[in-house]
Image (cartoon, rainbow, N blue to C red):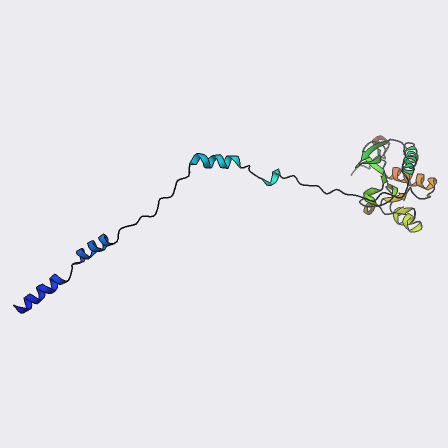
Length: 200
């Protein structure tokens, strides 16, 4: 009897697991996180529409301006020398003058250029002619008189020669250079060409 009494007392003293859960649930009230305030959709869309969309293409790209030093020769020399060059070139057959990159160019039949008139090209300080030349003529002229002749850029590797017009070069020499350039670049009509040998 004593053992049964003790077991009943211990069972009454110890709370059940279900009672413990109910007590903890009633002791700690469940707290919910505060609800976030919903932003109005219309206001957000209005703000996004008000902001301009920036793109890389919309930004203007500033182009660098090239500034060259002015030449030392007077402008009146450019006018007089160009008139002399035009006179010599137009004495040759089938010559047409056209501007090329902002400079006067002399072409044969409007297609094949044989001379260019350059005024302070890219700030080089020269008033000059660029002329086509036969093989070996460029080296011969530059070595014999480097004060009047030079190797021009771009067309120099192709054998062209530059003639200084702001120096005291003789016009007879300039005329000879122009005639050689014209003869080199000139192509006679097909009827005047020698017929090719027929293939066997």
